[in-house]
Image 1 (cartoon, rainbow, N blue to C red):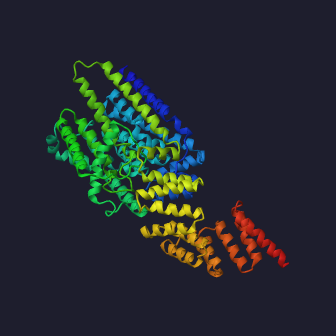
Image 2 (cartoon, rainbow, N blue to C red):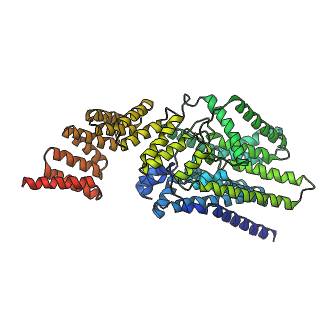
Image 3 (cartoon, one colour):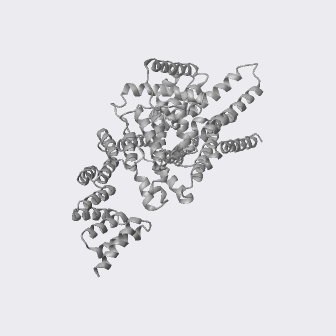
Length: 609
């Protein structure tokens, strides 16, 4: 009877969790894609847009373009596009559903591990509705967060089963679930270390009423470590692949740009800032600029972290969950805390998706122990406080979610909270540029340049905007400044070549495209532009060669057929040109330039008769 009642309560708790999540996040069905990486992950990614084909699945398992190996995340986005096309409502809704599943799984797993149904439910509620988790749920590009979170919960569940039923099949399932998480987002590489913590509490696979007693059981501890060696190997391989991918993308910060002293200082501050935003979730932004790390701030952070650690160590014999929860938080954040600098941001809300579980355990179990120790405390007060907390957090999370409605809403809010946020200026500039509001876009890019005069992205975007405005000399100047900072930027080489060609500097354009081709010989776009420039110079044979190379790489390139047609017209081979233009139009019926060229070539053929 007691067991049936517990099962009934568990079902009600899961239903309440899911209902609460959908009340808060239902608004996302009215949201749009943003220009904050969504174009890389979905809207402009042809592999994703074309759905689950064999070619695309193979690409998903071999791609490292976004700084990590994440084939299951790619397959998730492909499935969305296969089923829903580019309707953002469904893409958003899928992420909300996965988050709801994660919250229910967290409750189930915690209850399984501890047997504390109400404390487990409160931790799951905090996980479900905390404002710091909005970024992971409402941002389509962070599908990998909620997806890896789901595999994390499943791995914890299978680990509990393996601990109680030590069969090879169960061990294999633990490894497969962990692999699923690593293939979604490698942020879960620390899971084997978390399992070691769970072995101490709540699983109590090693008896320890003090740290000294724990250290005396070396054989048992080594045995627990040894059984996890396959998981550690998987984590190591995933970590190496991630560093390789980040390095290949050029997103790893150099020691010149981010000295180790700055990284360590920011890491210590970030640990404290995350805690602060957990307890008082305000000014939550999609991008946090690197702060000026002052020595006194670092020492205060060291003092705070040290005091918390010492207190948890002191309380370990009576309240082991404090140390386990604290180490969960510290260890899980370690790969993304900034010692290995990724990108230009100082910290990110999304990084707290799983680490905060440790803090929530500390708060709920610690709070439960505190009120139990107070003889005058009444149970009704605890319920009232819990209800007020849930209502307050839900309201804050609802509001925070609303900022992710679209690009201008998100980054206008960011600038309101942080007026000097250069990333917000860049994203707004890109948004208005793509919408054709070039002067407004230029103003945002110039503002970003004021924040950082050597900002590569601001310079290249200004070149792009001035190019679209027809102010080619200014565009050329900004592109040259960009290349002075990063001579390996292929896209800027291409844009510089195009701008020079439009100014009639065809020889310079050819040299620019040739330099770009030396950096990336397989780039089809460069060859198309080089072929076009050579055609304008009257070097028809060389131009024809470039277009032919493109067609060998991409037989369906309408641009290459159009280019060959132009070359043939330049050679007065009008009948042959007609065939090339016809093929270009067949491949792309909306290709207006090819249609016009086909008409011109056909008229020339008619005149010849």
